[in-house]
Amino acid sequence: MIVAQVAAENAEALEAWNGVLFDRFLAFRDLIVVGLAEHGEQAIGLAPPKRGDRVLDVGCGFGDSAQALAAIVGPEGSVLGVDVAPRFVDAARAEAAGAGNVRFEVRDVEIAEFDETFDYVFSRFGTMFFANPVAALRNVRRALVPGGRLVSVVWRQKLDNPWMHRAELVVKPLVEVPEETDEPRCGPGPFSMANADTVSAQLLAAGFEGVALRRLDLPLLIGRTLDEAVEFNLALGPAAEAVRLAGPEGDALRPQLAELLREALAEFETPAGIVAHSSTWVITASSPSH
Image 1 (spheres, rainbow, N blue to C red):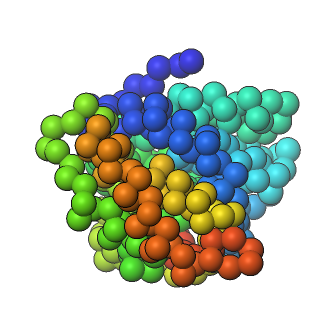
Image 2: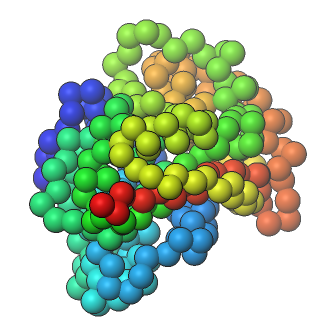
């Protein structure tokens, strides 16, 4: 496994994403990837790369979006997927073995200096955890050719993502997160780019132009059963992060929290499973053409 070179401020997040969060993403991968992939696929459909484009996929995770992009750009094009967590990169490489136009590298985009340029940069929920988003976005912009395009998907506000927010409202009043904890924090969190004005300012400060945000609302399966939806929310998301950071005290509360979450999530129960509303921004921007 390749060891990542990371900015000091991202070291703790790397420990989380390469450790416990990787394990939890793997355990719930069938829910996560299917749900998140639809947001990514629709974003790509709104602003797709061209055949032959050189593509950079930031925060590539298991590599499914990179493989989808590789199919679009064809053998004349190429895709480089990067992630700060070596375990995700290892998994992506294993699953893309044999694909001639996609490869994966361990990179912290906040300090990365790319020795190649790209026509198109994509990120599906891969930019919200940067400790210094302007520095990371500036490196992305520098890696783009003049006029190159960025397409990024990020979560919108909590109120429009009740599958996460409802669980957070249940858990956080009961769970005290200590200032000092042995558990590594995951970074700024999933809603760090929810504010349109904030993320627009970050992109402009990083040197992008033509910044635009489009709202995308989709149903999201968070469990095939209510029990699975409860476990999912106790494994990943802001509520789960609070429980994890609280350590043994959080673990002791899990049975009580599970019962409360069952009540809170019951309204999302449908014949197709536990389905809640989800809402994202599809962000598009470009590198200056001169």
